[in-house]
Length: 129
Image (cartoon, rainbow, N blue to C red):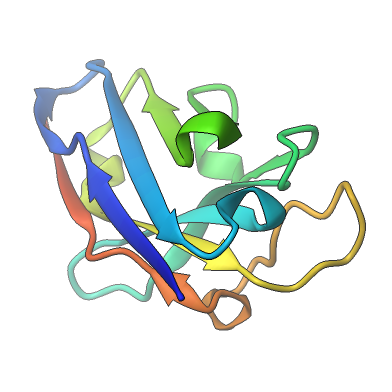
């Protein structure tokens, strides 16, 4: 079992910044790739960013490339999503998730939510125009 708890969401104006935190407990967090997803009203949940177990490889969806940064601290069992230059279209509930698959040291996690076995409860991010 992996328990994930997100925090750090909130309301910011366009151009603002937020850093989301995902605290993990349970089985060995450091062994798993981690992903951040988001779900906007009326839309499907979609990958935002992901990171390999060792932090050496990351993935970003095109719409956040250059604005968001995913990183992790395995000693603290925590993964972060640093978001800057936020836009109204970034408004969504953000979830972190653990991918239990292992596909090599640079595997940064799957692109589909079906690749992830454990999920946090989500944190709301609202960007006003």
